[in-house]
Length: 190
Image (spheres, rainbow, N blue to C red):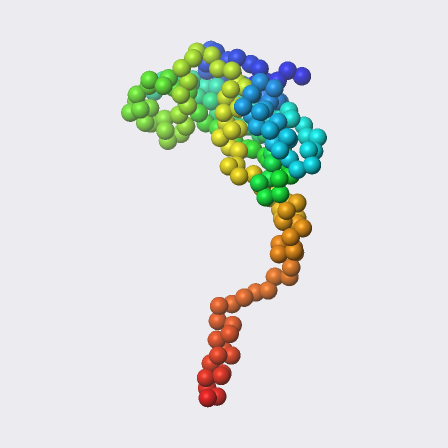
């Protein structure tokens, strides 16, 4: 299997022919993301053997826009990996899904010239003629990762699952004026 992240795309050419890239990728060509996943595996309680190469899928299409002139990138990206939960210090599954609509612009482009683009696309500055898809994917995933990783469910989190304060308890409905009737009854009797 060839990872689509390995593709180097000449932006003008891809936009002219409305190139589409769809398929799977892994973190082998994404050094910052791979280092984060490897560090999480090392930091996990119990030194669990974790997979340090994570995988994802992407489906993106390049498009050419003439007024104002820019290259558009639209599509979606899905990614999953294990990172350290900050509550229990065990590995927690993290999934990322992002829908993207990017306007690839030169960093010297005038902002007022691209004001109309801002309503439909997010500006992404890129000065080179070619774009390595791994760089794009890595940037998008890093932006979408949570700042503080935690298990979604209390039952799955090692620290909270064992703490009886967070154990499943019957939920009692509390109303703010529940004791008011009793207080009024006491005042009327006096």
